[in-house]
Structures are given as C-alpha cells and as structure tokens.
Image 1 (tube, rainbow, N blue to C red):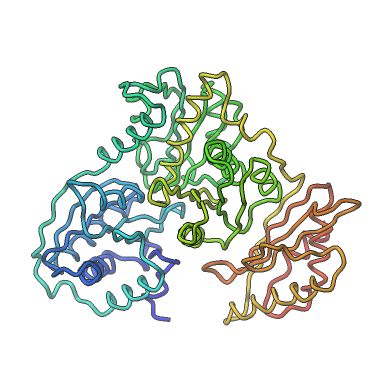
Image 2 (cartoon, rainbow, N blue to C red; image 1 turned 60 degrees about the vertical axis):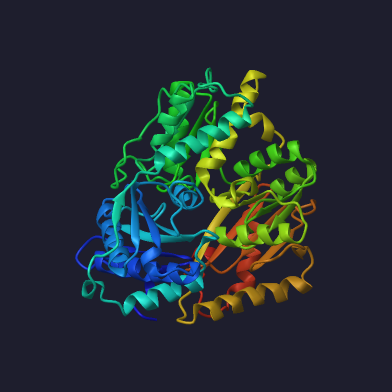
Length: 504
C-alpha cells in the first residue's frame, strides 16, 4: 500500500496533520483538491473550467491551512471555489442542493471526533458522499500530481454558508411546530455544548428562536479542544454536559462532535440519551407518527432496543457497522418498497429520509427539539418516551488486536471458529439477523435470550471488537469465559484482554 493510500479511512481521508513528519500536509491537500476538481468534472459531465467546488472546515488548528491548500489545488485545476470557512459536514452537502450556492461538489476539512493533531477531508457530490473506491481513485490520482506546475486560474470566492444552513434548521422547527412565529421556542431551555468544535452557532440559533440558552458551554471554536473532546460517545464529554444541564436546570442539553454529523442529548434530569437510548427516542417519535415502519441500525444495538421498537409497532433491522453501510441499506430497503425513514448508528450518526438520508446530527437534534417543545407544553419530557426501554444490567466492549499481517483472514478465521462452535452448542443461538461477524444470544441461568455478544471485524483497523450485554448479574463474565474457551487457541489474535475479563 502506498503512503497516500494509508490516508484512506473508509470513505474519508484522515491523518496526523501536525508535528515533525505529518502524514497529511498542505501539499497533499492541494493535490487532493486538484484531483477532486477533475473527478467532479468527469462525474457531472462538464469541462473543469465550468465546475465549482465548495470548501469548508471545522475548528481544528490545521483547518485553515489545509482548506486554503485544497482551494488552491482546485483553482490550479481550473475550477472555481466557494470558500465557506467554518462550516459543518452536513452543511457542506446541503450547499450542493441549495439555490444560490449549488456547487458541483464539496470538500469538508475535518477529522470528526479524532484528537486535535489529526485532520482529514470528506468529499461530496450531489448524490452524496464518495464511496471508498472513489477515495482510492482520488488518492492514486493525487499522488501523481504536481499542482504548482499549473497556474492559479479558477476564481476563489469567500461566501459563508452557515447563515443559510441556520435558516434551513429554523424553517424545520417552525414547520414542525406548525407556526410562523419569530420565536417559536419561547419557554424552552436548551443548553448547547459544542466542545469547541464547529457547532457553537447552534446556541445562537436557539436564542434567535426564543429558547433560553443559559449554561451553554464551549461554544467558541478552538481546535485544541481544551475542555473535552467533541464526541457524543466520550464519557467525559457526556458527563460534562449532563452536569451542566443539572446546574442550569435546563429542559435538555445537546452535544455535537467537531463537524456536527453526530450528536446526543441529555434530559432535564441529567440522563444521557445517546447510543441505544437515542435510537429508541427517535424511533418512538417516528413510530408514533407512522406505525409499522422499519428502523435500520448498526449491528451492536441491544436486545432491549429490539423489543422496544417492536412494542412501538416497528421493525428493527440490524445491519453492518459503518454509517455509510446503514444509510445505503436503508436506501435499498426503500427502493424495494419497505417503509424505512431512519438509518442510525449507536455512535450517533443518524440519517432521516425526510432530510435526503443525510448523515446530520444537528438536523436530528432539531427534530428532537421540536418534540421537546411539544412535550413541555404537555408537562412531559423527551425521556418519558423511552421510559419502557429495557436496558442491560451489564455490558462491556473489548477490542482484540489482530497481530497477523493479513489481519482480515485471521479475524475471519476467529469468527468462523465461533460460528462453528455455536452451531452445535446448547444455549448458544446464532442471531436470526446476523449480518456482520457473529452475534450469539444466550439463555443465561434459568432465563431465555437474556444475554448476547457480537464479535466482528473492525471496518478499518486490525481489531476484533467484541460487544457483550447481559440482563442478569454475572452474565457478561459467564459469556466471556465461554467465548475464551472457544478462541484460546486462535492464531494471530491477542486474547489477553478477553482472558482477563473472563477471569474477572
């Protein structure tokens, strides 16, 4: 694999962007800008001189330099640039379908929730984000380019898009509340935690619409992320926003990752509503409006969530990890005539059909705020919708490093070992919706189907992530002990974390 291809992370480009020997440099960003301009011209069937590409970035310290470099590469290819400056990943796509902007493609400079020293590029056309194969092609093309051999010929114009995106979100709130009032959120207290990422403007939007934002924190963009990582899965971040909600007495808190394609919320009692709870909440809202719909999630969702969706009259469809995977599967199901309005990962990536199946955490939060306002008028909270969600007594996640160079083959062999054992073992049941790795449900103690684990290959890394949940005390250790006995002779897997957890 070339050094350029090592920058590929799924359908994105990511790498360390600071330090003595950064992997992602302004030169690489410039080459990728030129390559994407040419790729876009070919995709839309225009001469490159007639193509326009939008550029935006999150708050990372390397963002301005990398964005300017990518813009220069686009210009040296002969295409025009709309330079948005600070923006969000979902807004970059929305600009493509917004009259008055409508670039042919867009690039977002971000590394999402990763540490401050990393950065990356995400690429969009009108049909959505690029596929992995497209990113492979882009990197191959970029590696052979010398942009400085070409003159700067395309126009570069600064044209902020965030104010327009804010108006689009405001319109969704007014539509959801069926009003044209200037301040439809009067009486609602929304605390915003942007984690010093790109999402601090959401507090301004809430205040503009009449909400009280007292206690909102870390709104100023700061790419060093000095307070906590902007990440709805980060325990420190969720603890911080939960405590802030309790201090301020807010009706709810919202938190975004650095580029705002993921989000979570906190109820008025400080209870975190992320992962399975977040999926349950938006599922309940959709099923209340239209019973019988199908909800597509990733593979690590809980048994309690499956029961919850079923009790609300819906169908729960588990699919592979990776937000692009769940979105593409939801699109496929709809094309087959299956009514599927939502694709969502436990990480907080969420895409609603009503919003072009765009992976947009801020749009999801906006939909939740509409519901929160309606419920407050009834004396209820968002948390009341998921009061019946059954949650496990125990849960754990273990990451088993694969030491073999051919890590995919080693990982697949380990999964096959478990599958073979489960086919013959009493009280081991291969899940009927097993679509990734191997998901086994267990009859623990005197119960039935009251524990499970999922062993799968990581989407990108030489790792076997293992998720396990139990509805009874001691169940997790019991399942891990059984799994260790099956895997203890597996080659090329570091089983030390599993052995330690199995022994308690």
